[in-house]
Length: 137
Image (cartoon, rainbow, N blue to C red; front, side):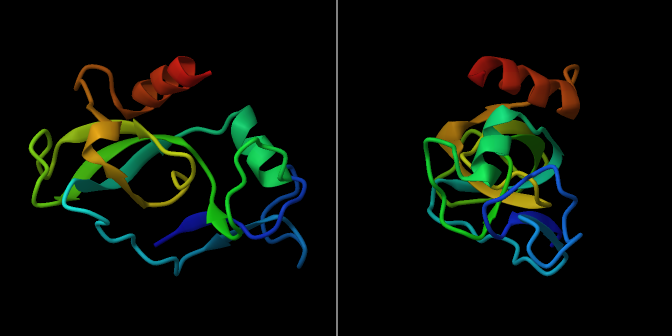
């Protein structure tokens, strides 16, 4: 799958892959994540956002330090692709939104059922991410 990876800490304003040492790289061969527990959900991401915390994560100045390399991004919305055997709130095809520490600048993400919310059809994927950004800002 495609993903935007922070391969080393550095200036996030330098375009990905513009130099051998740029902090960000785009990959088309990142593995699709697998369900991690019976309560996990695989989501195909439709929308995500970038904000100041993402900027700080790439710089290596965010309060939480994620091991390198990592897929950047936190808020996302998308469609459920697969669910663990104990998931009861969501089914394949449901629109959802969620907040993960990292991982949303990719085509897929796995999150726990308890960390997801049902996406209201009238809201839409992009507006759902905007709402999440406001909630966690």
